Length: 122
Image (cartoon, rainbow, N blue to C red; front, side, top):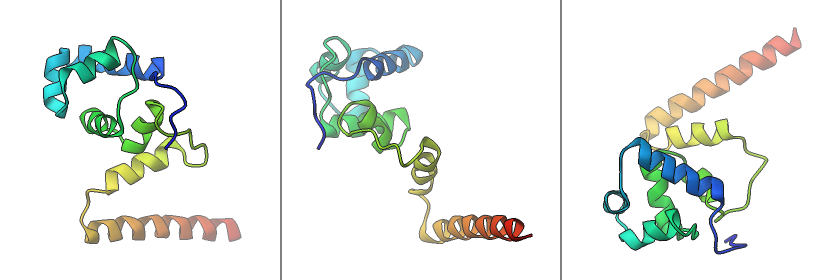
């Protein structure tokens, strides 16, 4: 796992603070909602300490964002330039679908790609 420093990136800390303010949440309430101790949240928002993997996953759920994006933002994973944010969002949105719905989404994507390829040939 990628852990270059013990400090969370400032942009990540500011994002958490902003979302807390947006939802009018204090440290204790956020900690309760995501299932961690309030000192864990204090360490993050006050001292900029990098959260643990499990805390970051809980924050991703609270933020309703793909866990891999939040892990990268928190500095727990290195950036991955090959996969853009849109692809990660698509993966995140489809992961909770049942098998049949996932198959339908996949069929739609394949249909769109086939149409694009047919247009290229003309």
